[in-house]
Every structure is written in C-alpha cells, then in structure tokens.
Image (cartoon, rainbow, N blue to C red):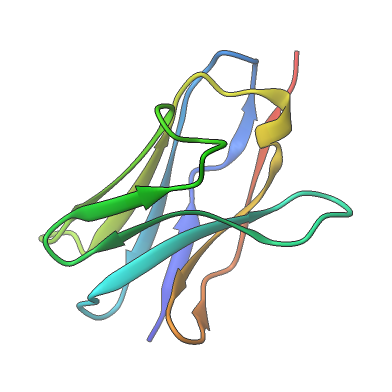
Length: 108
C-alpha cells in the first residue's frame, strides 16, 4: 500500500488549499491527520466507503473530504484557513499505513 500526500503550501488567513492523497489500492476508509510543532498528531477527518465523512470539531464546516475513485485519490478541501491550521498534514489508511506529510502554513 502506498499513499502520497501533496498540495500543501503557504496561504493567508481566510484562504483555501486542497490537499490530495493518491492511493495505490482501493480502500474502505482513509483518515487525514495533522501535527503542529510541539503538539500531538490529531485526527482531522475520515471518509469511508459510500462517502460517509466525519470531522474534528475544530474543522467542521470549513474542511471537506471527498474521493475520486477513478483517480484513486482522496482530497481534503480546506477553506477559511486559520493560523492554527498550520501543521504537517498526513493521510492514513488504518491500521498502519501512512503517507509522507505535506506542510500547510497559514500566515499573513
């Protein structure tokens, strides 16, 4: 199983970014996590087969996870970004498959 996250960058507060996670196999569930400097890795949201999604309270209403089965890619659309969203973002397939992280920095 291989995962490749991409799409991070520098964005101003209030801006948007879309992260991508390309997967090498069909999955039933994929998680997005993030880890800010000096903090524990935290779950941002999940998507399961059928398109069911769940989000952390801190991103609910601003972030959206969706998949493109043809491209075997899962996206994390992030809107209304805040400085506290700054972190390295990872995609994860339970129980133990992690992609390399992609840095998101929200700053003016």
